[in-house]
Length: 235
Ligand SMILES: C[S@@+](CC[C@H](N)C(=O)[O-])C[C@H]1O[C@@H](n2cnc3c(N)ncnc32)[C@H](O)[C@@H]1O
Image (cartoon, rainbow, N blue to C red):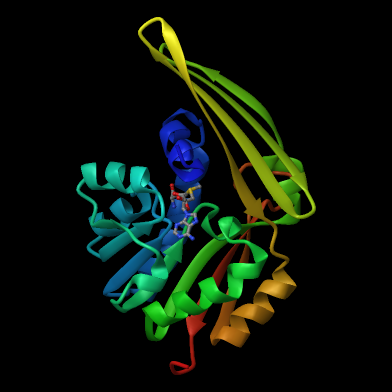
């Protein structure tokens, strides 16, 4: 199983619901204030954020690289496609990337990814996303966790080194009396705000706001929410 699909399989067992709702509500609040007619949610996962937008009357398309995530989103009647954003031909007033999506983009690809996002937007369109702070990676995201259910045993081991969080996931799924083993590593990357700001501006975004955010920790900000506006014409 490819690592993003493996994450999709175990996601329902991760106990983040309350924290994520807080993040969803904060980002949805920003989107509603912009009042766009169409939104693309990049890295939509199982479609929960799309559902919030749609239930508030916004036309939303969810896209994700994981076929498994998109299957689950579609089962909830979300308009969702397993497509790379570089192949998406539609334009939107607003793009979102919620709950770690930008962490998944390696340093070498971030400028290209942000350029594709820029190209998805109408002039004056908004891009809103969250990203982990260094504190979020070093102090919050690292660690080990095991989850034992009737038919699954999951082991997660996350280590942050050289600005990369490598999360090893091992999943044992009960099949009759035997267990099937799946294993994969998800990588997330720390992007320093200063560097990210430079790249966003070089691509053509104006940064309207960077909001400090506490997702899993009360002690320090473990995330930032970026609110960016497309201000230049197409290259
Ligand atoms: C932690 S999940 C968050 C999913 C969803 N936004 C949510 O709030 O539950 C990160 C998601 O980003 C997706 N992803 C990672 N890299 C991506 C990329 N380059 N383009 C689109 N989706 C990507 C993964 O497949 C995964 O579903």
